[in-house]
Length: 116
Image 1 (cartoon, helix red, strand yellow):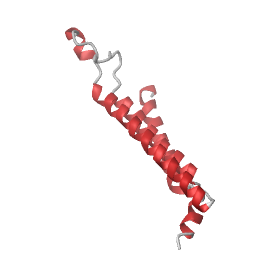
Image 2: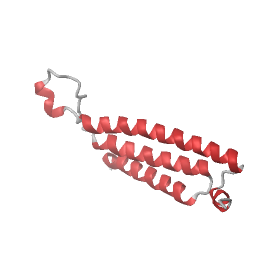
Image 3: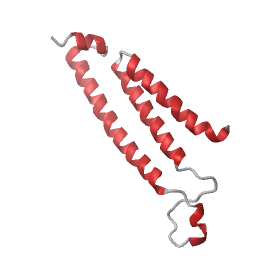
């Protein structure tokens, strides 16, 4: 059961993030939901690359330990996802600040009704 804990946690993060992104009306809470979904994906990618007793793939002269090395691909994907998620969150929060300055509210329904 404990071996499935990271996968269950990743699924719960995705569900909470999807709920916040779809059913909340506050723009900050929607941004938090999107960030939760990104964290769930990152946890899932890290969990896929885990191997019990595995060593980091930075040793080039370790032929006897080659079967115990973890794959570097999930680690690289996770680092890339973190950078993209950070940039996406920064742009999203900047857009929320501009919307708040223009409309004076963070409620998505009121901003949608003010369109014209």
